[in-house]
Length: 85
Image 1 (tube, one colour):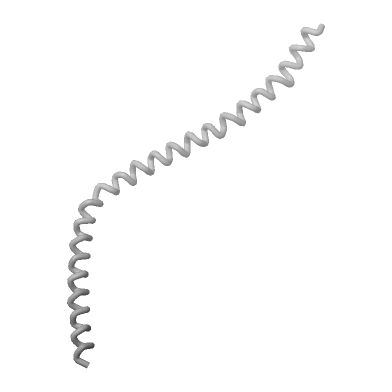
Image 2 (cartoon, rainbow, N blue to C red):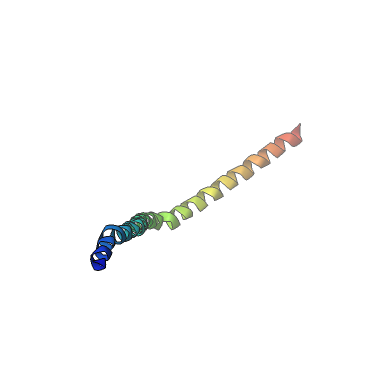
């Protein structure tokens, strides 16, 4: 008789509690896995976009040199005008 009561308690109490606890552990694990997959996919896309950076930096460096030369000419002209007054 006690054997049947023990089996009944096992099936009606212990197993559902274990299943609920497993569900509470597995659900966040699956969410973390999904988020990690999304992060990896986005990093791969971002890495592909970074392939053009060295070429763009070379162009930017040239533009900065041109702007600096123009700024020096402008500063020199302003200094000459200020000295003339």
